[in-house]
Image 1 (cartoon, rainbow, N blue to C red):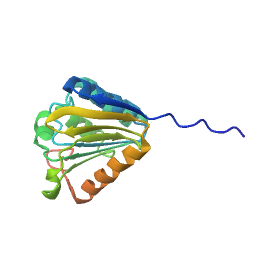
Image 2: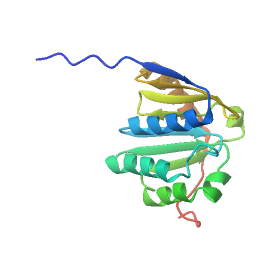
Image 3: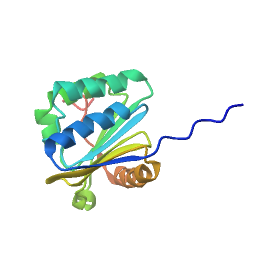
Length: 167
């Protein structure tokens, strides 16, 4: 029986600008095969209402009925009022998308991140600044962020509903 090939070596990139950050979001989304976890202040200025981002997330969710997208936000107003594409995605894939809003205790967390599966992530050091780190094939770093994400999710409240009635 042949040995399995070794896992790919981790790759890291430092990002300094908003355009680089938005491109890195797209890259992380393209890496996802099973799940995406997104933590952001409010998704504003991150390209989530663009057609390209809508299509990338839609393609991810269409890959498998088992794929999941979980989003945790401090503030959901931008999402619900100014992101019709994301709200359409939520309606179309309500079985696969969960959106939560943090509680008061977690509102001090200021470093957004995105995790694809258990291997790839994009970590912005503060939501007011574009400086970030992109990591591919870094299970240890992703695990640390997954733990933080899960801790926030435990105390977060369900937020954006797929319909205006919340049904």
